[in-house]
Length: 320
Ligand SMILES: [Ca+2]
Ligand SMILES: [Ca+2]
Image (cartoon, rainbow, N blue to C red; front, side, top):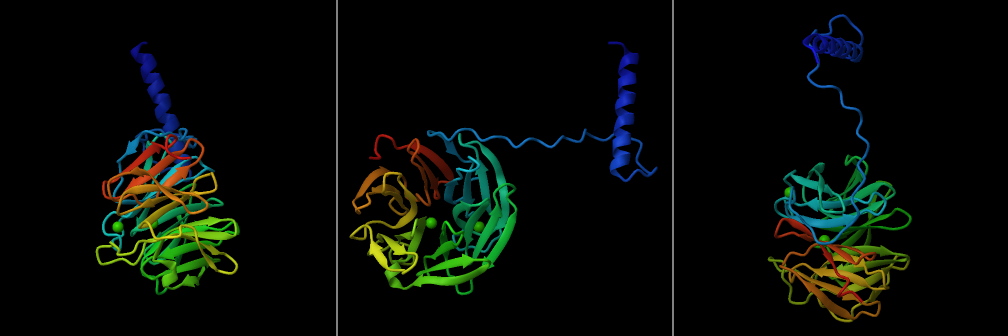
């Protein structure tokens, strides 16, 4: 290629660039003469997520993760970063977006939160609980769409969404469960019979609740929590496990009529049958927070809150 060919191509590129710049500035004559620093990138097509897989660990941008949620609609994984104290109003809480193979797609998917915890999605909105607020996030962009501040909330923790779109949220330290609908919160249930509720799941006409037990200042308990159900219409409580057995944090369906739950302080994972038999199936370091379980493939996603990492595990050998 000759030097003159190069110079012709360069001149063409410069003039085209100047024309584009001129157009983008409104077509006036005051457009600067120099070429733009870089070509304007075409809108990138949304990258498809990698298939959900087991056997990986993610640490990039992971900072005291409380919840991990697999969104079946988009195929992406979302995880909440408390980043600092669980009750810290510090403005550094984030949501991180990952692909199914553990690749971090965005470590700043949503920023400006405080200490976000539970995550669930409904109709394109990712819901989280952040201290005393229930926050709706556009799952396509990460932008905050709505905030509902709950007066009197002490330590909001997990969220669940009914088929009708009502968002339920546990207040572990307040011994309450709130319902949020059309931007307004109301008390759904309250009292010590809620066993200091942490994990929450909507399952048909029931709300499944994971009790932590009455926490001491260090969050340990003399009596841990049970797994129980609340009827969404009557609010009647039905125990699932007959006895308290764990400081329950994460709570998922096992796809077999029962549940997968995590014990945060013990680091243990249990499978609980529909009739309430709790069986330990995995043990990690303390700090197994709000897990995700995907029955297809028996994949468990664990936010290891004390270790600043997310792990993905194949439980095929232990889930029955
Ligand atoms: Ca924080
Ligand atoms: Ca939780």
